[in-house]
Image (tube, rainbow, N blue to C red):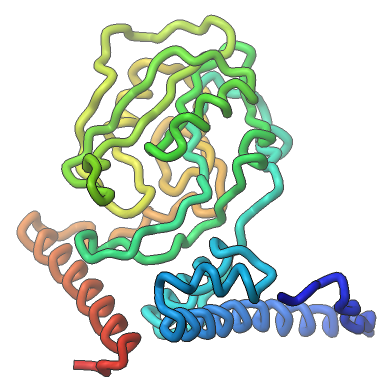
Length: 312
């Protein structure tokens, strides 16, 4: 295994001008993505040589980074191959996010959809799901140290999946939020871990800072809504929040514009563009079927190529 402490720092020469600095930054940035892609391709090749069972041991014995990092490089390479172009490589964020420092004012309602350090699962039962995440993730320590624009009296809604449900309670404690109840999103589909129950639900921890009451009591803790793209949250949830929690509201790590909510995040209109919008119900359904079928076909073609079968 390479010991990084034995490697000298690379030579650095200061730029001669702002234009020279711009050119060097762009070149190095492109090189970063290219290196991530090539690393992933090399790791995929190694895995094919040593086999699935021996890959983790090979990485631990020969490479200085972890198996999680190796899998991230591999997922990134596969995603580039699927798209047919070089994409941006997003390393995991280990620094806390000071949201309260960049968002002016305090909010009485805060929805938080954290970028948990998860990896997508490669399978074909959800054609719209791609093998690698297309957004920054954060470590648990960074999440706990993140600051939010909480009013002294506010409602907090924290999204959590099965794996990170216990950690979500720890986040509330770290942020000084008092846990009240858990809401449950019941989905129409879900992923089934081998030998276990289907994960067709997501959780929303509801908590308070201070003693702000609900505007309307008696709403149900469980609500049904169809699952859509990875990480996209249902409209039904936001309809519920508008009824019971007051303005001003903010949606943190938001990926879709919502009426009655300010936003914070680097993909605030990720799901804003809908090419099927404006079509009749029948045409829209056909559009979705074609979109999923094309994505499914591209995944199959890519897997065949990876297995040495070539295109069909």
